[in-house]
Amino acid sequence: MKFTAIRAALLLMLGLGCSAAALAAGGRADAAAADGADLLVDVTAGLPGAKGFTQEIWRYDGLARFAAADAAAGASSAGARQPSSGNDKAAADRTVGTGDQYWTAVNAATGARYRVEMPRELAHELHRLALQSGVTSGDAKSASGAPADTAADAVLKGWSDGQDTRTRRYDNTAFPFRAMGQMAGGPNSGCSGTLVGRRHVLTAAHCLYNRDSDVWYTIAQTRFRPGREGTCGSDTCEPYGAHDAVWYFTPESFRLSEDNWTDDYAIMVLGTAPGDETGWMGYVMLTEDALHDYCDANTFSLGQCFNRGYPACGLVNAPVAYETCKQGWAYQDATACHIGSIDSTGSDGWKARFTTNCDMSGGHSGSAVYTNRWAGSNNVVIGVVSTESCRTCAAKDDFPNGIRRLTPDVLDAISYFKSAFP
Image (cartoon, rainbow, N blue to C red):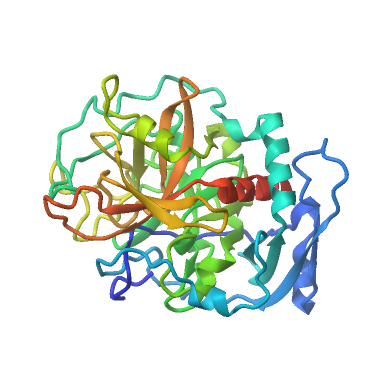
């Protein structure tokens, strides 16, 4: 993204990355992309018990263009309008049918681009099988120590009401925080992401693809470092290593639109599996009432929804009140994330976006809004950070940050790609 661009919302993203050993699902190498061949994909590779499925054909769609090596990935845009509800480019695409999902797949090493038609019934059935097998519930692995109290070392700061209440976090190697990480990241660029599988990163679509210039970010610009604590470049700062992407997946509707953020979510498949060591978070959809029940203050709780992201410290709205922003460190609001509006109906009929009061800035894009109380005490993702509507917000701006809510289409897509790329 470019910080100079004037657009409909302020993007909270930053990042870039990928590996040269890019393999298609089912272990088939992507060499066919060189001559423009379609790709045959076994979408049940991660669900060996699944029967009666046919392999999916991904239609070759040419070669993707990549950003320049020195481009600022995850840059922010300026403006204060809410995301629009229209999708002019998608409306002009007469091949898009109702009911099914269409995704753009890019091999991050070769640049081969495919159009993926995801039949809704197939995707939903794969998600149902994933639920039955426990794939969607997350995996803490051998978690050492319980998650820290989010307010234990917090000093109030606040951006949602004109102040910044984020604090630097020192517990990034505890679960679930070690399943969260930074994508590339520099003083003026970068994004955040969350492992929802052993090598599957859930993030924002604008962290992988720049609509302004119609380019995809490079492998180096999306490199994922889970549990990162600083920029020293060694195991001290990158306790679980740095991991390159093999595949980028974004909803086609996001790529075809100019200013619609309804489908600003994406899945990045890594060439290695850091989740085998860090574990990964579960993912669920909550009804509107449940969103408020989990996240908002009530008689029994001050809220149990949170966000943790990796800000770019060179930006004007980076954390400043408690201490000078430290590059490569995770920051989290001292208070829980409460819910504002819920709107922007998606293709599955669910309202796709909600606003929150949690404080964020450029670099938080792609990070998770999550609850640590699902079914009692499980950590699950309920939304993906997308946009903000103001930089330094006034007292009246209680809910300035826009989140892509996890809805049936999102859950089905995660399970589809996790099954295709186990």
